[in-house]
Length: 201
Image (tube, rainbow, N blue to C red; front, side, top):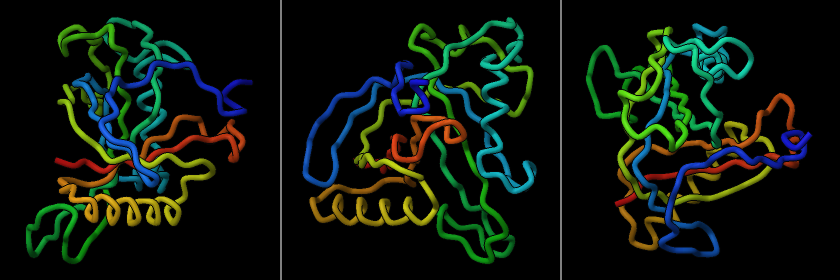
């Protein structure tokens, strides 16, 4: 019932708060290990969250873990997603600016529990689409919000956060991430917790 009403007790990534303002906070995240999958939503019938099932199968939330050790791995929050626009056939340009965009690739990511210190210690995924890698320490501008993280709402949050960061002298160095702390299918919208994170120098 806790997830339905927005409460969560899963492990979350470690970070230090460097600055707090009325509009955002600056967090410095510690290095971590992540499991991620990058995919074209069309392979999941257009579902941008289609990679979620692949990742939960890997860690064994709903059944036998799909890894070579058949080892259950604790779920962490939030689930991170990032959209990556594909490059153009005519002109190869730096993401996210592209010409004649054909589709958007999506990367979905789970932070692995802190008990795993090295990539070599993590159970190897059976599904080759799942990649285990080290995520270096990074600094982000973050805004937290409730409700449904629709494309329109997220776009608005990203634009406002980016403007605030640049106004305050921060240099944005990458695409935004969307963090969602609650399973949308079973959590009442008003109790959901979401975050937009933008990397800064």
